[in-house]
Image (cartoon, rainbow, N blue to C red; front, side):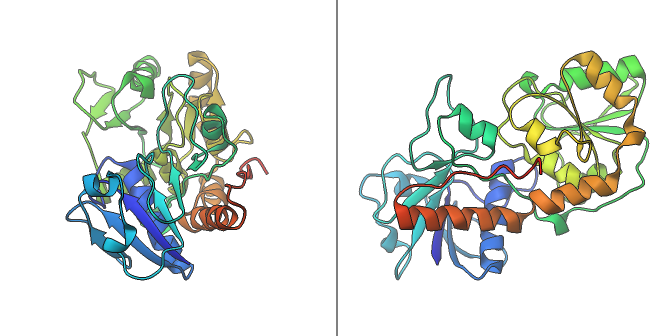
Length: 313
């Protein structure tokens, strides 16, 4: 199958950019599975093992866009990673990586990134994000700090994690966004990537995800599981499916006091179980196989098949 992927920005990214990393891993996994993959991406894009055609995103989004001006030969399906303004002249699907506005219904060609995400947008088609596991270090022995790794936005709940660290007096490393005013219990390291990010994910006792919004399928949770690091999360968006309810990936709390109680029993969580959860459900190859099933169903029946919720099995 010749699969054309479209990402409107330059890839890969060094630091923040979960959707961009998903696009890179998906392309590489599809190639590993034996498919012919072409990635249309922003100027300066380079992805090892993948044929990349640098484009101006505005050209791709214009009416009358002709795939074959950029790619010779037949294309089986074009996969956008944003909503499609003007359809191309080949079959197409799109992944919605964020949330639409209140009450927003996804068009019929859209694939969500979790069961919760799809259901909130009026569709049953979804594929969970997956990470390239060999890019992360699994470490069963943890250091003496907790980790918050996300945008420093109120919906991500970083202030909840800070409050907990001050109350319970544990070391919390905060990675992301702009620098807030902190205390002796909190260490700010800014936006991180590469070896520094792998080190923090592998060494942290846990990852805090007390989000205050319906998070579609946050990549940092999958990165933590791949590193053998349990996640403390609120019951919002896809978090219950990603973390699980059986203790294999951490735990879900309803209230602030619940999160504190989970933090006090970190010894109950097994890093090996976290890594196994990532290997079973959230690898880049599993993600690619599920997308191939979506492509094949769409080409055969003219509609996207339903997603499969295997994370609780």
